View 1 (tube, rainbow, N blue to C red):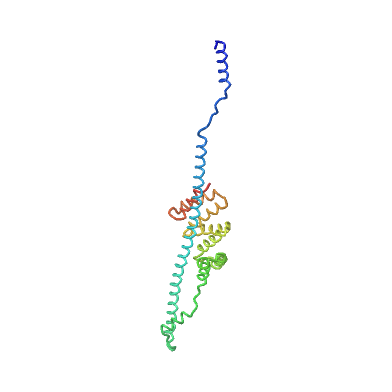
View 2 (tube, rainbow, N blue to C red; view 1 turned 180 degrees about the vertical axis):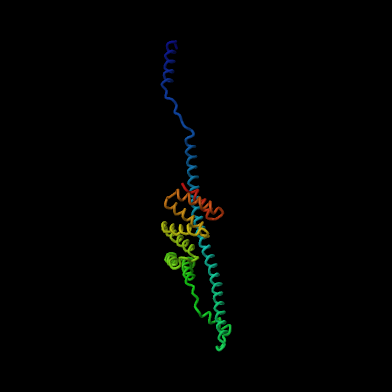
Length: 249
């Protein structure tokens, strides 16, 4: 091969090298990044679902606690009522015996006869009976809708009763379960503002925060939950308020 042929061949090889297409650039990390993003999305979704289930369980526990408190309250009230009736009965017996002693011409009654006569005399327990009937509709009969007018009637008949705060709470709870947010908030707010020493006040404040959250009033809900935690730091209501506060967006 002569020199001219070798030069022509060299030029052809160089031209082919210059005109060759550049090698494509491959991102070797793209698949791995997509997988990591997918894993993170699954973790976030799983965490969100877990938080929602935990919140639902907390709400169920709170409702059970409320029913247990109501049951304890009912039994305590019944015991007080029995003791009060016994005191009234003995007072009535004393009165009857004293009346007999003051009238010697009459045949004296024996102690058993006096007790039987006292038991036959009706004892006025309208207020207690009305409250018991309303509470029993909840705890025993599970007739929640019928309990609402019973408590409303109780509040009208006995506005100065020692059970007014409890009646407010039960009405708020019953209406809350029916998702009648405004009416429920009215009764919870009455308890919170009028009965600062009530054992139901912390739970009522918690429910007011939950109602605000249900109505998408996030600022009010956050403020109410923080108030529960501040005023009742060691209560179960404060723990639920803290959980609710973390779930706010």
